[in-house]
Length: 387
Length: 208
Image (cartoon, rainbow over all chains, first blue to last red; front, side, top):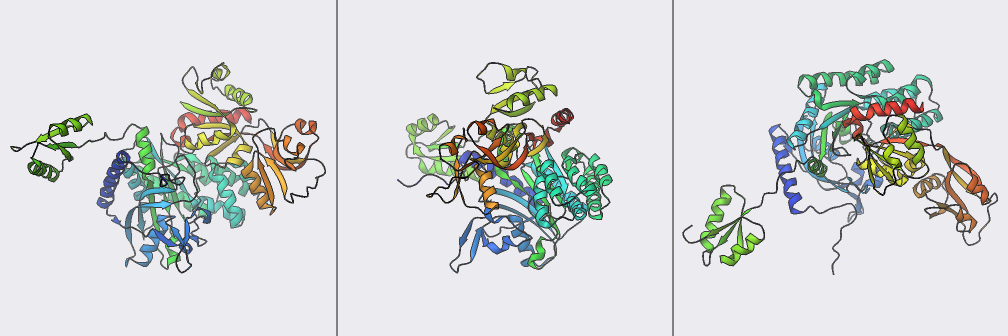
């Protein structure tokens, strides 16, 4: 018998789940389009080199790789933002673009649980724009998208890489050491961060400031604490950025949806400004992730400051399910032709589909057909000659 | 309601005592029961008592908001969770231990290391550029060198009495200061902050 199993970390999406997923996609497509985003679809296969450049590094061990006929190394779409930046920088004759996408991305690491190796994402990228208003708009749109998806009890948690970068400048760490410290801070592991920093010879204010990062989360009160810690200009600019964004989002009516965490420093090295995550009360992992990446397109020969985010659609589905917010299953009305009345039944079926109703024309006919369809739990409409 | 995943075994009693001192109603943890989900009488807390290595799994998935687990397990499991506090209980070290003089085994040129901490051992020896044979075990690790299943063991050492009773010694301390940690789910910390942060503050005061 043929192998009917799947490799680890991937799932089939069955009809009930798939119909909800499709509906979610339709809602978001409409939302993206009405907010002025144009859809793109990047290629599923790309060159390994595109993603392995040292600035853009997606970890090597997390990419699905294969060799092309000419021996070049290919990867299965490991990241969408980078591809979109590539498209915007090299194929669109404009300095600005607002692009949206729906795509699977692949991650060789199989985390299990809520992590999958095939991640179906919906996202937007605002390219060629900068400033607090662009950031605030993007975050506001993220909130609107999660609302549109039907989620409640969620927040957007906002951080800024500039603050950490500023503190690093003061510490004199090498990029290699900095990455280890970043990982510790991002897990709020102050103890190991301290061990690493002391080993690297960091002391005094530079040490204490970095160690204060994990506790710098909450509402806008963290700004004044963060400002009091350092005079570094990069760090100060980051706090100013966040204050401006906070002012705008508050004025736009989103105050209740936002929180801040200056200790959130995501691993993808292309982020250059704000970072944010969408957190839902009933799910232990983020459903949305985004940030500003002003220098990502530089590698493709064009400077396009940009900000964007992606949502994990399957995670949103899990969150909706936990919140009891999944739509009811809509079974189609089943039309059964009476004996010899196939054509009129078909005409009835066609007319109803054209009106946008959800109907199915049964392949069974007559009294027996009606009985079998009813036994299967469908609402049945028998159609005869005079229908 | 805050849900805790607590490590069974050497940390269980001490972590329960610590939480009680911080105002958590832990009476239910002392009841004789086979129930797996224990809820406090006031309905504010829920506990799962699980194998230490499972604590980070429950917390990462958000099934538990907070967890208490040893740093040794956190190093081994390497999960995406917040490590909030050092609880300073159950202190021990992760060590390489064996006989004072290594017995050369002709048929096994690579050092044979028996351990429960397979991932950590792999990382350790690969960082050092040493080829070793890792022998995964789940308990009574000290038996391995005694029976010549391995040359050395890589394990936690608290008092060293088990080592001594079997004629083994610590050859090298790899990680010191292995203590219990309070860990948190990354989302719960933010979405349930009104409940969780005051508790964390209390625990912090208590262990300071």
